[in-house]
Image 1 (cartoon, helix red, strand yellow):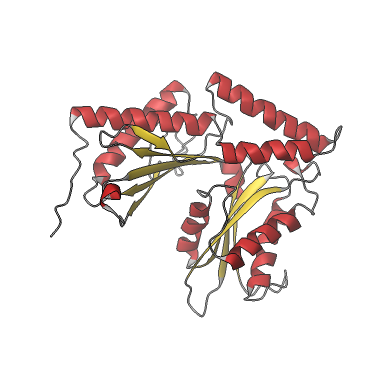
Image 2 (cartoon, rainbow, N blue to C red; image 1 turned 30 degrees about the horizontal axis):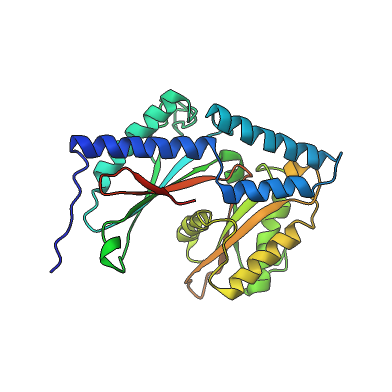
Amino acid sequence: MNEINVINLNSIGLKENIFNSLLELLRRTSTELTKDVTDILYKAYDDEVEGSEAKYAMKIIKDNLELAKSKSAPICQDTGTVLIYVNHPVGFPQREFMNIAKEVVIRATELGYLRQNSVNSINQKNAGNNIGLGHPSFHFEEHEHVNENEKNKIEIRIMLKGGGCENVGMQHSLPNITIKANRDLDGVKRAIIDVVAQAQGKGCSPGVLGVCIGGDRSSGQLESKHQLLRKLDDHNEDPILDKLEKEVVAIANKLEIGPMGFGGKTTLLSCKIGHLNRLPASFFVTVAYMCWVHRRQGIELDKDLKIKSWLY
């Protein structure tokens, strides 16, 4: 039987290393967009018509990105729900990691990388440190290593999901007579486009969609957000879904909703679609809407829990 490698995060050296690694990851996630996102945003800026409101909106977006990066300041005043995804080996101490990550969130709030946005839903009180029930939100996945070199690999991704774009996400249950959506891929496409059409400029378009076909209500929500971790310039491994992703973006950008709802050529930057098995009685299409401030970044750690490489 293979020996399980248990990491002791409470040892002084390792705790300090992973604290610093997570703090830098959180800083960069809040203040800098990754190249796959900025490339498509700059292209959208170039594509909009000179003198149009859409061009003006995209220029503000472009200027804001460059200013935030140069000042190491949050790109948006809504620094969002902190979603932390950990892909880890057998024996990874999840509880110890969560405790350290919460300390990092507190420190990041003190430094201004995060605003004091997390509020108690019952008494409306703000602890001022972004710590509370369900926040930050942790998601752990134990990986199956394919070779000895990957046995102890640890990857951590952070996504900052703003409240405005979260508001315009939606879950359709098919069939839906109102939008003429049956339980097929055409119905799925209609359901996704309906979400974009209802959002209009709300949610700070141009947006990015994460979609899950199937699952139950809760698993569909989780998978739709997980799709937002993909690179915007990747290709779906499923050729059917790859085609559907491109069709959704093309159709949405013909709606002329445009940046911030001012009209224009760019309503969607990208669409990423996954699927889960479903029960015969249910057919959900779940759409997570991400604003143009598509903040997500990731790191791989080395054996000392320092940053080995960036994932985006």
